[in-house]
Length: 221
Image (cartoon, rainbow, N blue to C red; front, side, top):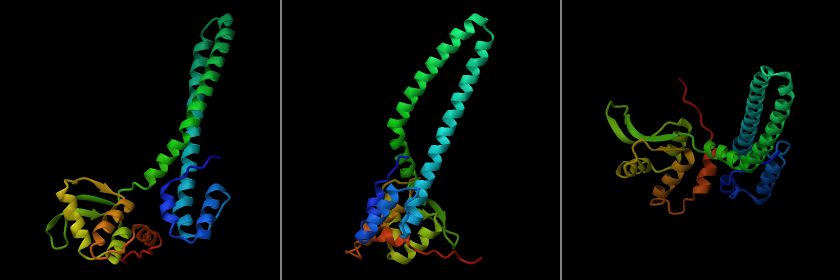
C-alpha cells in the first residue's frame, strides 16, 4: 500500500535522538508492520496511519458498490429491449464501463496522495479552542479564547505564564477573531510567541513535544 506522510511529523521528531528519528521513519515506511517504542509513534503517527488506511478502504468499497449499482441499473434497462439488441448493448456497456474504470482508476491514483494528506491535515485541525464570549466562575462574562480541550487547558496552565493566555485572548479580540477556532498546534505556537517575552529561549518544537507526552489526570467528580 502507498504511504501518506504528514510533513508536520518532521517538526515533531526533530528534537528526538537521531536513532529514534530513524526508527520512526523506518516504522512509517514499513507500516503496518513497522513499530517504534516512542510516544509520538504510538500516540500520534501510528493512529493517523491506521485512520487513513481505514478511510481509504471505506472510500474504495463505496466506489465499488456505486459501480455495482450503476451496472445493475444498466442491466435492467437492457433487459427491456429486444434480444438482438441485448448482445450489442451489453458489449457497448462493457467497453464503456471498462474505459470509465481505467479513467477513474488513473484519476484516483493521481489524487490519492493529495486526499490522504488532506485527511492527515484535518487530524491536526480539531477545534481545541475558540474565540468567543464565555462565562466566568463568578457569574461574569469574558470575551477571548476559550480552551475546550481539558488536556490542553491543563497543560497551558502548567507550562505558560499565568498572564499569557489573557494577553493572547486580548490580542485575538483586537484582531477581530471572534468565532475563529484553533487546534492544539496552532494555539501552542501563538502562546509561545507571547511567552517569549518572559522566556526568551522558549522553543515551540520542545513545547509541542512536552504536550505530546503530557500526562493529563481528569479531575475526580
